[in-house]
Image (cartoon, rainbow, N blue to C red; front, side):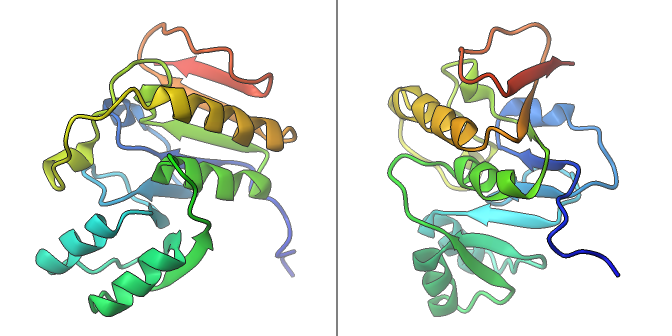
Length: 184
């Protein structure tokens, strides 16, 4: 019988940055963020914004796979009659993205978290493929908050290796000793 407490060898979290197009893995667990605008098959979705649920309602889109979210998002989904399996496993945290939540949630469950489409870690590009669906105003320099959050997540999960997939040779900020990157 399978041990339900056994860790997965790898988990892939797919953000909404342009470099998620580098993803090329099959048959491993994948969590995407918000409404995926790519054709990557996935096992779960991370959602933290009510406006994503509103888009679902306005476009008659129902999630077919588990949604990992905050209680506030789950209650809003129920109110907006969004079907599916909504799991309120995230706490509301200031200046956390859906990607932060997904990586933090999955890190204790695996030896390796592979991160795809997290371009804002090495650039000041905060555009998201979601911006085409849910337009947002100009964003401030979020790395002033996001990079310290990444650091805290990585440092809190020292037994997990975080692998950030990047296009070509990029320079990552010095985030933590358990973070590496693979250039594609």
